[in-house]
Image (tube, rainbow, N blue to C red):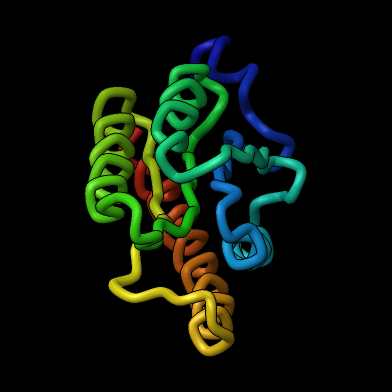
Length: 159
């Protein structure tokens, strides 16, 4: 392991993980962060090894992911957000740009990026949709943590 790599090793022997979330519908997206933190801890990663970042909306996530990946500090980056149809713009274009950007970051830097950026076909501010996505982001947070932990283990074996 190079000296530079050693300087970024956490107290648990693995490198840090960055979690970047958008602030639109924060009460829903926060669920993903909470579930991620609990599940990644269950996979053996210390809470102190996770750095959390917030951005205004999902569109800003890929640039932050790119800067974080290029920093050399992070073994993995997790992105979380909720892109909804607000009736003003085509949310599917925003969602596509975000996912394409995240994939580009991953392929350009070699740092795995995990997406829990969701784009529902239908989302209304009503209680039923709010409750559904509030619960669904718990599921997505756990799944993101599981994918992150498994991928980091797999990449470590390849190194």
